Structure formats: C-alpha cells, structure tokens
Length: 83
Image (cartoon, rainbow, N blue to C red; front, side):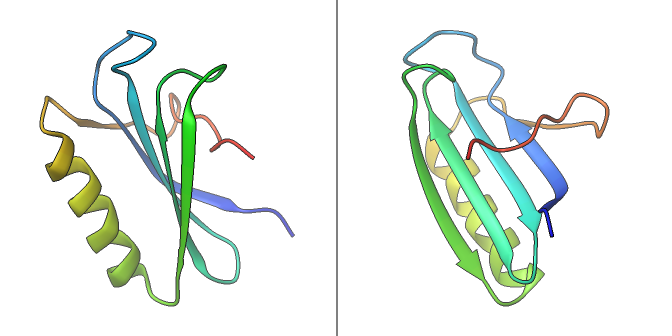
C-alpha cells in the first residue's frame, strides 16, 4: 500500500541551498517529510505520527521555524515526497 499525499508546502525559493519543502502523507500512520535544498543535494528528514493533529503540529513548527513566505501547494502541483 502506497502513501496518500494529503498536502505539501514550499517556501517559494528556487535556490539550491535555500529551497525548503514539507509534505504531509498518510499510510497507516501519518508521515511528515521535510527537505532542505533541492532534489539532488537536499537533506531529508522524516517523522511518523499516530494522529493527523500531531502531524500537522510538526508541519506548523517546520514552516514557522524557517520563516519566509510558505504556501500550501494545490493537489495538482504537489509532488510525492522523496523516498
């Protein structure tokens, strides 16, 4: 069974070192994946949660900690999180 992508956020920066992405996905548990940098050289961190509320709190912390102009991506523009 694959993960279901629920939402995705992007900080709006294209730079290789400054780009940030956060995904919210659900398999059996809720998954939050955060990447700093681009898809080729980015550093990826992962967390698992039992509830959507806990997962969304982590997304909120990640987005607020980085500052910038984060925006949630529409389902059409949201890519799958890195493996």
